[in-house]
Every structure is written in C-alpha cells, then in structure tokens.
Length: 158
Ligand code: DQA
Image (cartoon, rainbow, N blue to C red; front, side, top):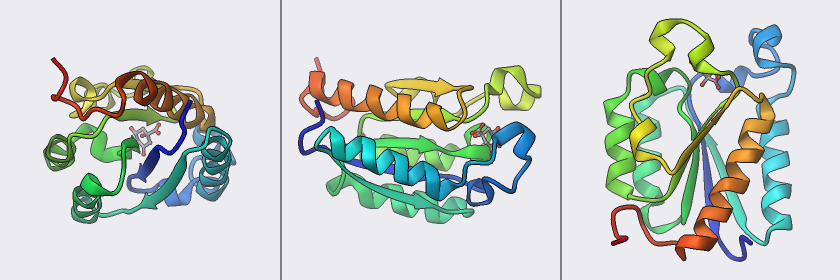
C-alpha cells in the first residue's frame, strides 16, 4: 500500500494554533506533531508527503492549484473555510485529485453553521471527531483508495 504516492496535506486557518487553541476541544497536539506523525505513516507505506498550512483562502487556493502536477492525492482540513469556501471547492474540482476531508472535531455535533461542508460531495471520504487520529485514519483511507484506483483522477473513472 502507498508505494510512491505523493500525498499533499493541506491545513486551513487557525490550525497553526493547535496546542494553544481551545485545548479542551482540539487537544494539546501541535500541528507539527500531526505533520510529523503523518510523515512517518506515509514513509512506512512508501509514500511521500508534503504539508502546507495557511490562514488565507487565496493562498490555499493557489497552493491547491499547484498540486495538479505534483501530488497524487490530497488530505485536507479546510478548518473554518470548510463551511464557507466555494473557492476551495472549485480549486479541488480544478485539480481533480482524489481528496479526503478530515476534521479534528465532529462538526455535526457543534453549531449548525459547521454542519455544512462545501466539499463533502466531491471528496472520496470524510473522517471527523477523532482528534489528531482523524488525520491518520484519513491518510490510510486515501492511500488505500489510491491503491485501488490506480491513482486515477476524480472524474476520469467510468
Ligand atoms: C475544524 C472544524 C471547523 O468547524 C473549525 O472552524 C476548525 C477546525 C476541525 O478540525 O474540527 O477550525 O475543521
């Protein structure tokens, strides 16, 4: 599983504050801890992994556009932009890479405005509610999916 796949991890706004930010809700693990753990899970599976975080919607869109020829799959936590961003949805549609959506918290158990995701219907799968483990489960799911699909871009399958 995972041999040679290039995985791009993308983190949205305020996730750079993990560890300090509402620790009772998001835990004390830092973003660097999460990225380190994902890098070792990927390495064990023979995949390579890059991580990117931005607080800016435009920078996230530009980064996603650049993944078209440099990644085979995307693991994304768009954070607050999950609930609002048509631009991130459109960027994911443009790059057409298999994508897994992850969230630390179960957004459906929180305020109503967090129940909607602009990308829920265009991703391979979603993992939420397991804290940092959501990312690990999501990465394993993405690698498994890539293995079965042969890395075919979304929309190219019959
Ligand atoms: C989050 C959930 C979002 O509603 C929130 O805005 C975040 C983090 C999560 O990982 O649980 O910033 O995406």
